[in-house]
Length: 260
Image 1 (cartoon, rainbow, N blue to C red):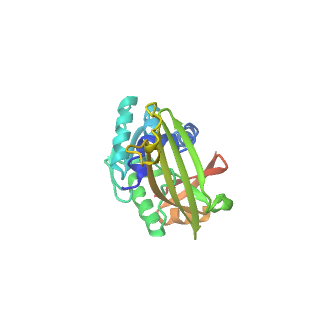
Image 2: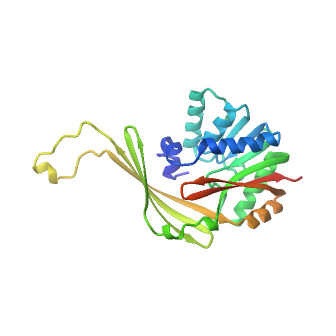
Image 3: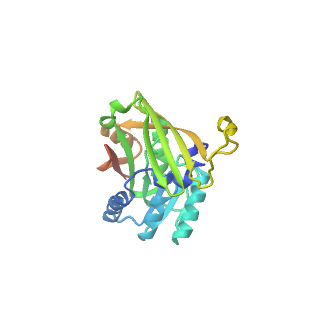
């Protein structure tokens, strides 16, 4: 996993992701408890926020992620927060941690892009769940595309104390996939700067307080009927959908249940 977002930028991920973490946990928890779920695995858990939050609420929680840096960060944060979930480095296409779970999560639009990969993901998730186990994931809908934003530079920034993080994103949609290029600029604030002499004003600086990273992402847009079809072919059925506002966008979720 070589993407900067899951390597050099791991420490900033939970601050810049921009999701309603607490609102999301509240809704997910309500589904899990209403269904009698006590154990949950997060597939593509990232830095482990959901896993840690669910562990604090008394769930037996585990997280799987392909990024070693994500899992390393998640373990450190869990130790700091004094919770004890399991974290495993692995691919959600084939990783089979010990035990069968009551529920699975796959969040931050981590669902695969290609049809055959969606099926591989669902088939493996099926093997991880008990009968009538739940799968909750978020996804993008075509109706949520803000066409006026495509091809334009969308800039966001976060002041994280000693560092300023700036992200410039440009995206385009081809067929049903959003291709996005993101440039991250990390500016380290410093009180040690001094005015240059006249000759040095025109020289390249020897040191810099700025780091830049280029990241690429791919997100597929689904229709509800597509999700139902994928679910059926892998032994699931859709039992619910819900939505959480996200600035001018919306984050959509589907709840599938293992049927056999």
